[in-house]
Image (cartoon, rainbow, N blue to C red; front, side):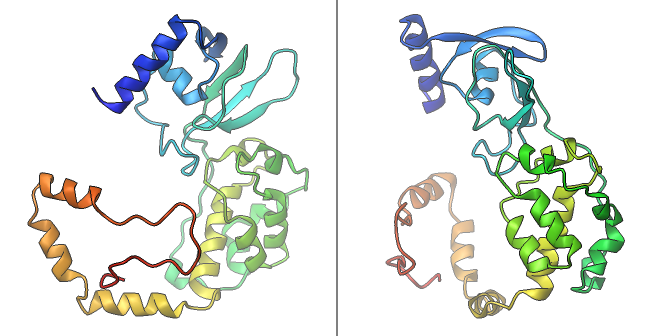
Length: 257
């Protein structure tokens, strides 16, 4: 029995033993009873939904499971990620695996590091009225209005820093009165800053030279000769960085660094 199947059976047993309470939620307008301890994503699977798309990483990183929901007797419209947000009684919810927003076409190599490049590609940035609805909609607590303000000021370093945690879910776009594609603007800002403004990391240049000179080719060739069983053993026995460690940590075997 797989770990996933065992988890489902354990949950079912706890529900039947009434150790976990069932609560009503509404998915796309239909009422379901689900365990109150589950995230929206797991609750939908418990209710019988099978994810074909929109489940993404399941770890709050990719932004594929953007969700909009309301609570009873509450006029607020709430947003969250289905893989992170825990269900609440009587919540009405729907997932938005993709929110349409215009994305400018450009040749990155031909772009300069000047803010005017963004102004030309996304002139709607100046339609921002600083209402801050975008920030309130962000499930990652990104200061969306602030990084858009930094873009308008031409401060791409600050804009790149403020938008660093953007996961491209698009919920900011869904609430924008100025109809800006904030997450596409943020992505372009970070690309320009990282590729054309930020100082080059010397260790990265060294790693690139090592790859070009074939430092890791022998190890890759050996891995390609392994069958699935051998690869499984290598994977399970690999050295893993501790969850809590300082910058000084290095693996015991350093020939692949």
